[in-house]
Length: 187
Image 1: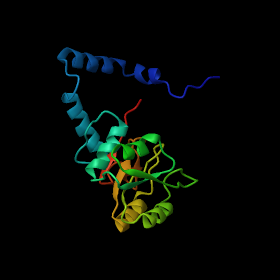
Image 2: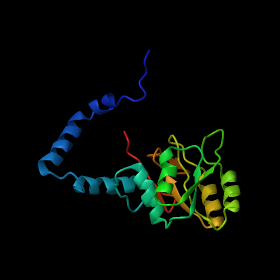
Image 3: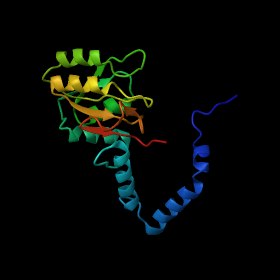
Image 4: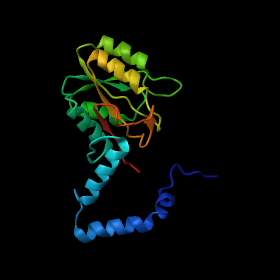
């Protein structure tokens, strides 16, 4: 028996009328970018994440890249990323001229190992500028421990919450705990 990875048609079937109305509204107004729907979405998503602001950009990769730039990460700096993540996390670091430094992950969760982060931060003291904890498969990182390591070593925490919409850590929404965060809305 074939079990599909994801059935987008089944997901969309239930919302077809709502999608159709929204699509035709945009087409009728020729409001293809930066329209009121984006502003409404940004406000609603920021509220869901417990944040003051959300900004829609073209992709999750661009979201990580822009989040790093907003955190003053630049060329030559090193950024800690988990060894187990989608390529876009490290790619965004490279796009801004910084260097990704891979940190081992915990076997039981596949998330960044805070002890390995501490060791890497001590080894790269003065060169590293940020850490990107990735909340993967809807499970949040040990954000408190990652933040404590970051505080000790002067690192900006840029959350990659591209796969953690609605996930929480100790009652706080993923995407609300770092200096910036990135989400992706790939199907």
